[in-house]
Amino acid sequence: MADDTASAKDDFPQIDEALAERIRGIDDDEATQRASALRQGLADYDLDDEDFGILDLASEDPDAIVYLPALPVLAIVGRPNVGKSALVNRIIGRREAVVQDTPGVTRDRVNYKAEWADRSFTIVDTGGWEPDAKGINASVAAQAEIAIDLADAVLFVVDATVGATSTDEHVVRMLRATRKPVILVGNKVDDVHQEPDAAALWSLGLGEPWPVSAVHGRGVADLLDHVLTILPEISAVAKEEVGGPRRVAILGKPNVGKSSLLNKTAGEERVVVNEMAGTTRDPVDEQIELGGKFWRFVDTAGIRRRVNLSQGADFYATLRTSAALEKAEVAVVVIDVSAPISVQDLKIVDLVLESGRALVLAYNKWDLLDDERRVYLEREIEQDLSHVSWAPRVNISAKTGRHLEKLVPALELALASWDTRIPTGKFNALLAELTQEHPHPVRGGKQPRILFGTQAASRPPTFVLFTTGFLDPQYRRFITRRLREIFGFEGSPINVNMRVREKRKRT
Image (cartoon, rainbow, N blue to C red):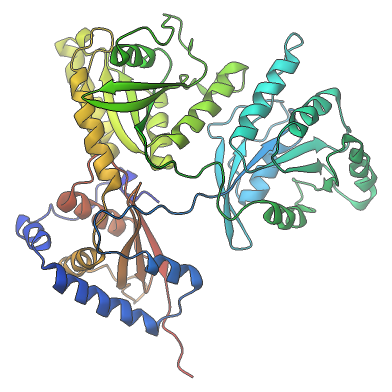
């Protein structure tokens, strides 16, 4: 959870500079000894194997780069109205994917986190296809290709009551050509009398069909048990790439100037620029020299309004944008200052926050700004983007090249923050100072205590707190804010997670 994404104001005073200086000046050996004593104190508490794995990541080396394991990815594919969204909702245990009888209903998100039998994985919901009579094969191929590219395994959902259609058979040909494991699901098998409908799907040649009822939950547990035997523990497709030029995704709604920005930084026409919004379809990887360094830029298709997401290439472009963001290390979100900040702009920023990537905000078309619009813009930024006030900001004109030289320092600052690691000793010294300065409020007659803290990962900085009780969200934001005030983290989201543990019962 990125606790600093909340917009609510918390009742904690601004940092005392004396405290900041004290934390920065703590003797490293003393901090290490104190952290070691706190770590030993955890022996009195019930810890599991995952806890010990996190504790093993504790380090005093500020240059250590540690990644949390990439979750395995399961793609759900199928033609419209076979019940993919209902199955997604059943698997993740909450109603997030939109479910309607209309084929191809649009969704805001395509990625969901799921958990089954103490294992976590990511679901990629590929949405319903809207194939037209002219290009059904092309549409199906594009959809299946993207889903497969992003996945460690594929759930292919078929409506068992309808049986295999020609569209289903086309997808099967696509799936057979891949090396990805495919699990065939016969949905809408609501009772034992309909199981022969699922058995008929053996004809598709993908092995045993798994009969389920996504609406009623019938057979889903058995299906998930089987899925876990197929999915790897750590994703083979979402793993981090290490080394080489730092990877930059250029994001923004259509026609904000993403392609112009890439062309201007490259010094030549690499991407077609058209006044018609959304002319860019696929991410275009370009290695560019900028500020004396090489960078790998990815120009992504604009994220469309919800109503258009499922229609043809625009829906595929959104999936590709998610894929590009997964492969990037830092995202430049381009915002057109000549128009009010929109819901689309905010959704794109939230997409970056969810991905855990570093963030730079590029306010484009600055040369078109008059004094009146500037006043309104600053007010919009303060109101709508206060939750990312930590992100470096550059005011540019991609068309004229104005202030593009400021982009590199902003990228370097964001990436340095994204890479930052706080030594365990100093982090625990900070926690001790903070809890002494502002103890957590008493809840239900008990006051939660922080037993120990460690930075479990960088890229993005991820902190884990071992506690005796649940910490209020505003208290976690208080810790996050103090981390920013003392150690910077400009341009990087910060995740603060908790592991609530009880004292071991003495026998």
